[in-house]
Image (cartoon, rainbow, N blue to C red; front, side, top):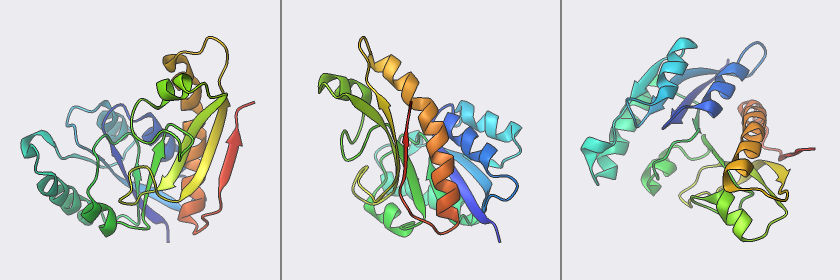
Length: 199
């Protein structure tokens, strides 16, 4: 029985695309839903073209009512019956109630070598700190922001003349490689750490 995967996005969905493309053949999972908090997210159109069901729950009408927004997310997700939820550029902070409901079934990719640089502006922060390497992390989602168990990391060197934009552009292809690898292993029940290094 293939695992059912829902992917949450907020924008273009480049990681979502790589995840969907990977879930073919002998892969232990299949995509059943791409869900966004932005009805205009380009990733929804891309997912639809790939034959994946899509839905949007616009966060804006909920204002500061995060519980109300998440209740609607949950309603949509429960209808899709996912075994695994992948956050792929989903730019809403989730409450402890939501993360507890899906505990052990939700993954996220974060553009830093966690536990370094939780939150935003990770590439600029790595440069400001004078780091010699940077990268991305796939982890299980818990109520601790960007703090769940690490399942995979990919490292890239920081080179002379790097800007946050240049560094981000080198990290992104590693995100596209790492996340599908972790998902395939996770869907098969294997939580062994995956480590990649950009040559």
